[in-house]
Image 1 (spheres, rainbow, N blue to C red):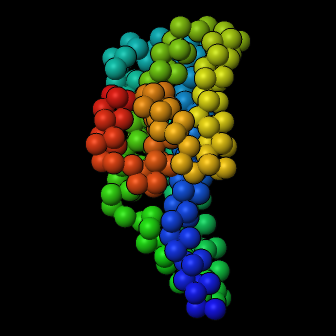
Image 2: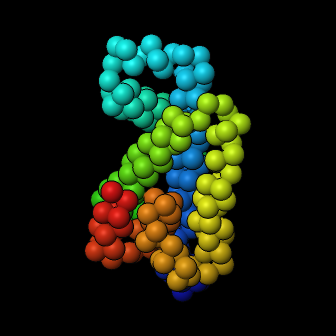
Length: 215
């Protein structure tokens, strides 16, 4: 009946952003981690082949660092853009055949998510996290001579980075899990957990404070 539809719509508006936030947190983790590993491997390969020494004779180290970080970031944006275009095309095709009631629910969910006060902070957390981890992994690569040395160092780091992923699994069962809030204040975990908290309605002062903590 009408009451059931209204109840479902309210539930979707309330709980939908939470699940979307979990998905975005997972995607943020995978994107930042994979791109940072690419930066790490690139530095080690250039060191072992002496390419880095040649480059340093023609450009300062800071310029090379910025160029590497921006280069991988643009590749990441290109891949994300292509996947988004494909997903958007499939979604647009599906929406054309969607019943009116379901279409209304899609509009409700989109209205709860696609807002300036949510999109802008999430972009800032992603960029900040990418820069933080990208520069860190490049620094690790500069101290390693081989991939095996890098893997030995990366082992403990990967274990630490699994903490936010495990907490996100727990958040699926408990949307109001306090652990998410506490861990989101740890700069290492902030870019992965704050997308979930932003869509969950985190106070603006916490958003600003955690962004500052990443800096």
